[in-house]
Length: 167
Image (tube, rainbow, N blue to C red; front, side):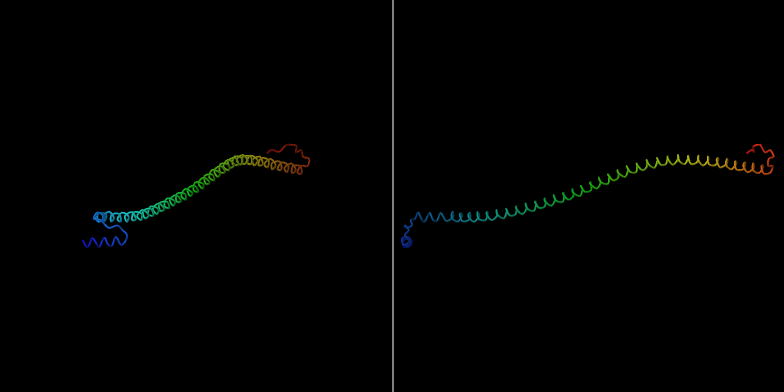
């Protein structure tokens, strides 16, 4: 009874009602739930820390994926711009080729026309040369006839050279 009196004495001194055997049993039975409660609070705190770490990890993964996607888009954009530049250059080359072909066709047509004109002029020149040769032959013939007539006139001076010389 002495130990019970000691507890009674201490609880009365603190102003608390004296502990009954039911209170003592209650405290004994509450020890495990209180320990479990502390464990649950600790688990809840650790869960909060783990959630923050998980969210940080997810944020970092998302940021890395976003950067990789952005980089891929920029590379695709650069590749497409290069392709557009190549296509524009190709179109420019094609237009230049078409323009040069038109110029070639124009020059070819002009060259053919000039060739035809040259052929006609060469034919005219040949005809003119032939005509000139005939005229020169006639001139030379007439000069020979004139000289022969003058010589005959000098030789016979009235000697009846009324005949026409032959060619």
